[in-house]
Length: 171
Image 1 (spheres, rainbow, N blue to C red):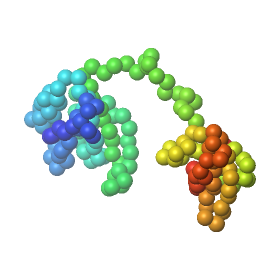
Image 2 (image 1 turned 120 degrees about the vertical axis):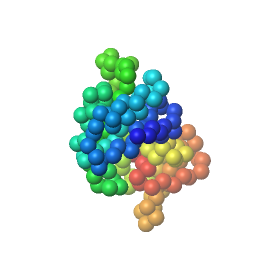
Image 3 (image 1 turned 90 degrees about the vertical axis):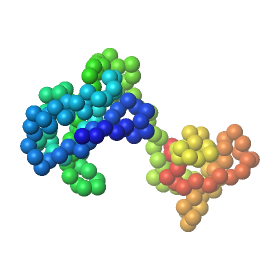
Image 4 (image 1 turned 90 degrees about the horizontal axis):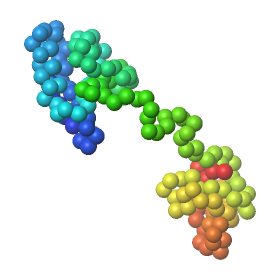
């Protein structure tokens, strides 16, 4: 078995991989797994992702060593179902988090416009890469054939016209 840094190597997670499926688990292969885990520096989490065939062989041993199955997903590359396991030698409690996980507390995206606005309407730019992102702007032209809406900043109604697609504007 091998470990590699997860992602950019900055989050304190190692990925443990190379779980054979062609032979039964023996005390020797269990010891190899245990030693691979022991080589990971204390305080680092370990992630394991297994196919169902690998999980049939290895999941009981992983759980015995303290891994927890976290979720399953379908791999977009192979279409196989995979199970993700995580381990940490001293995980912190998820009670009393210093942040909210309530979806109601997430920022709300303004409603996208479904129809072209009229000249003179005030709309909000909701495209994060746009110059006027999160700003209210005044509609000065509507060019349906080109699929564009011309707007000016409310702070400079005589300023330059910027053109946005309808999907970049909201209420």
